Length: 551
Image (tube, rainbow, N blue to C red):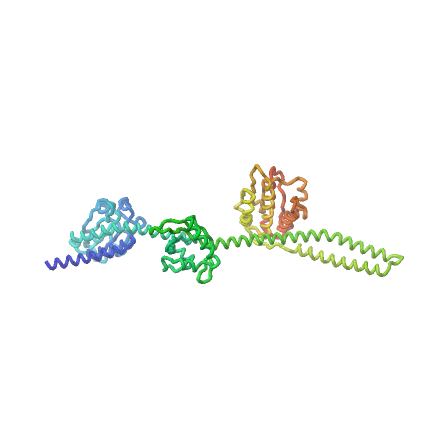
């Protein structure tokens, strides 16, 4: 009697210990390992395996083999690649949900590949289903080197109880894993989007926030919830007064909140953030502000970079205009200087005849000649300076260069009520060109197109930018649906100092043609356009030694 009581106490202790081990696990893999370990210990079996599948997955497997790719979890001791049940056993256990005890020759054992006992003898086995909500979700298989009596009815009862508990826990583990996976996706998404979520209690001034919020504000994750003072300590001192006013106004009106400000990290790093939120009643009944905080530092940096590019293009435009203007002045001024020189030389010759001219007159004429020579040298030097400003050639994606210009002019396009269309040849190879100079040409043509459509009423204002590869050349067209070019103006359209605009300088198209000529190409106005104007330029892919095309 005493021995029986001690045995029951031992079994109860063992079962309690087993359930404790299983209850600690929160993953399918952990549950499978815990079940196998406790089942081996409780039964005295030496080999075993547990496999867990999704709902009805095992039942649908007709050939009784369960490769790893069909399973959610498969563990065995000792390790084997798969569990292959005899067809009749599979039908009784998986489909019939019956606990089966039997014996089999070691050579035919499911786990025979790992058996370390003499051949030519039988081994006992226990195979029972893991059932949850009347669905077979797994199998527990055990082998013992002892006789069938190793798996007594009491042992089977205990193992079945463990298997049933594990099956129920497996469902909870699936929900937990799904929740953990969802949380992992959310964290990863917030990290990639540099955007965190928060909830701020307006009464207690305490906040709960996601991991990304902690990173944005450089606050230790051990601080939970976050007091307002910790949050305040990270706000740039110059930005906090405006933020405080915005928060106060939003709280008083219960209106959606949005504000931009700077965050200062402990190492001095400054982030630009954009905060959004709306008010809601929290679990405690307090009014809480719930929303997101986005780290927009990279976007701000990109905006600054775009502004720098815009400034660089404007500077390039001014330099190009100055160069063209200088060249025009050189051309215009050099002619009268040449005339002055010729007149002065004639004067000297006339004065050299008889009767001799006065000595002072000759000295004055010689001074004029000297000054004219000096002025001519200055003019020649200026012209040389302008002519020698060579482009900086490098490999360029012409389509990308055009898209950058279109991005820069997007505000002007939108203000002008213009619809932008693009048709780029994606097969266009990279070309040798001065990227900034080509972008200056495109920028000038785009702005001309926008201005040409400013007075259009009653029809669409459409600007089209297109590219295509033709006979080893990149051909770019900027077309508008404006008023077009007057036939009289076509002949002088590219002349320096000629303009069709009331306030124009007449340098834009002249500069564009000069830049394209410097690339060995040409710029022209397309003929036959019924509405608007279409300017096209073509340049060779390679800037090998060549002569500019005739304009």
